[in-house]
Length: 121
Image: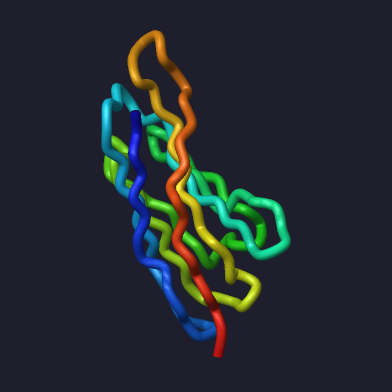
């Protein structure tokens, strides 16, 4: 199995910055992609950003130009740098991992427990 440990959430004022981290561990053959999703109270979970093996990235329109996702070569650890934070960014942020556990156990999805980001003055 795969364990994801997130860190870096907290309270920040509008316009401020935070960096989230997610570390993957366990019986991983290969990580295909890692991503960050968020869920605000009363709303559905939504994509924030993803990074695939090879480095290609995808961002939600609402965070383009403000957030940046990065990771090490194997994507064992990924980061979400969040700048110019807005109250609308307040949410629980979840790390997602798409990994192959073996050549026969492919594209398995795993979620972290989430880290809370609150943007408020």
